[in-house]
Image (cartoon, rainbow over all chains, first blue to last red):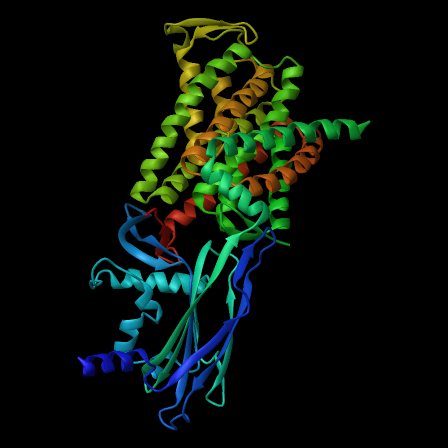
Length: 249
Length: 303
């Protein structure tokens, strides 16, 4: 019984006696009318109760993950002379935004078994109902390619600055086409590929001002919103006509 | 100046939208069409999702057609009973179009479906307009034999009704069908359908030219208004911010276009419009025929 308790205590403690103290430059991002992306600064330090081991070196991986949504990936095929959507693969959940920043290439500082446990790299965050079959693999690769090209999936190796094996910082830029919701920030310390400590915090991304009012109205009171859109169109169309008539005199 | 669109959830340059609206307005003022057939594909090209482009395009057409409809109404160039019959058909067609649009989104063929409709209808109408206007341009100078009244299959159907302003006594079935076809197109393509309606009114219904434009604008205002509402309620895809900028650019462009338009001959205008319609059809047609750069596409689905 005693040994068991001791084992529990040991598990709770960071294995190497290293603990993350960290901060994020802002706790929230407001999407306003002129929102053009945002940059967040993640910084911190490794606290130790004894001198750091000289080998293996400590490395840092920082991830930012946007809200997950189910997705449909479709593939076009040449059918009867035109390009039509034929094959499709449904993804149970994939983050709308995902950035991985690290001190070195993630493959060099993280064991695959640890990646599978903590879901750190991009493929690990894409959730298919079953293990993807050989047919599905190109679809999932396409998802990563498309999202990386649009800036929704960001791979930034060597972008985390680590000073004297203790202090670290990185800038992560969020693109302009953000989806609302909680964004999860995770910091991992690794040694020899194994995760020694992990810390999680959250940034709330929300539409603000006019954006928020319009979005909520469109979703919650669609009829009123639709009538308002029509009124706006009618007033603008008719008003402009009248205005130009006056100006002509 | 970047602008974040709340419903489309993309950030676009506000001046690009104003310019786009201005261009469409200019063309619509010059040719007397709503310009929906241009706005929807252009919006898709700048990254607005197809659903939002169709719904917001319809909303923009409301603004561009209502001022024209009001002006024509003052001139008594609107055949109200005919407009009402066409609108009735239009609302039915738009409802059916909405269902077909839903079905296509479920099958994952929205983009191909919208593209095919564009190629088919724009190609057909553009081609017909071009042939017709080139012919009439050649004919100028020659005397034309004009018959006051042509009896065709339109006159043999039941449910006849008197349309005083058009000087017609015909069955309501053809106008209802024409209205329904235009309403259907409005729902799936985000267009007003003036480019289909005007030739149909002249060649199928035999309406006099003086009431054609006003009556078609009257019907388009109602049908696109209804389409906007249907999309807003069922798909939440009308982006008011996007519509506002397009309309702002559009109303200014329309005034300039109308002034340029009066300096051109009717046949020249029709040839230009036909070429423009054909150009859009060809551009979209190529997208369907050429191997796309990216074969895969990602869409968010409801949980």
